[in-house]
Image (cartoon, rainbow, N blue to C red; front, side):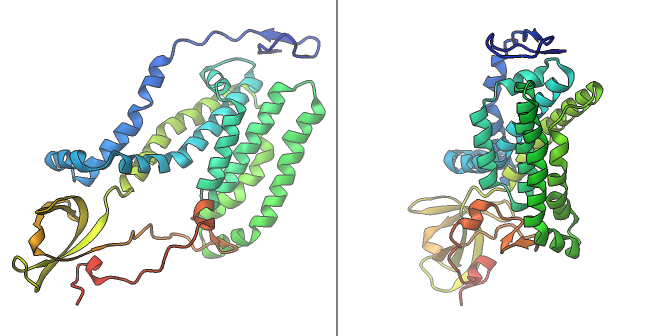
Length: 345
């Protein structure tokens, strides 16, 4: 049996040999590319907002606040980073205890300390939707079980407790708590929500032990490559849909300093000065509006995403995160006809 090298004072059963981990190759180039990914997302967001027009893109780059664009990337990272950290630790530990060998997954997992995993679980608990929390719990249990099995093979009692007893007990408790939401999802025919709520807790006891050598290679490398391909695409879609400019409705007069409203323009304000207001309307066209034609202006509320599921657990809808659930409700706002392109009357 061959395992990774450990400190000289580690206790190991007789007959177990130590295998010295190879020195990882120089990978500093990878860290230099990490800041480029958020920059690419930001440029893509502006390119999408400009409707692929180069001159509009240059105008947005000149006036849009980098902090506003960065907020969209940070909100996306709130759920992407925990998924990457937990999947990396779980796949690396699974590969090592199943094959007894090292790989790029194992070396990458060794670089993630336990406190980072704990912070990833906390961030996911706050930022992930309710229907994704069973998946988060399953990943956390898998990481804990695989880590204990890897670090303490000479303590079978601890291994059995963390790898079997805790996942089974947690799965039973999860089903008791989630039972109302599971029945609602089944009654409404919401198969996606039903799978996300019902399947992960039952898989938790199966994800804490070794698998055959060939299966470990296929599972670890296959899942890792899938995440490498899919997560950037999903993050890009989320960032492309994130708002970066305030949505405003303006009533314009027929003549300078007039009172009669000629039209209502709804769009995103790029910049404004003493003479002109620059607006990106909903069609993607840039309009320069003289301020002496402005009759009134109103900030339109964020329409938000249309709910796709009505499943809820104690008035906590499955598409809500814990942060949005415990945060104060938004102030009630009356519908303004100007935000729909009609005069205020």
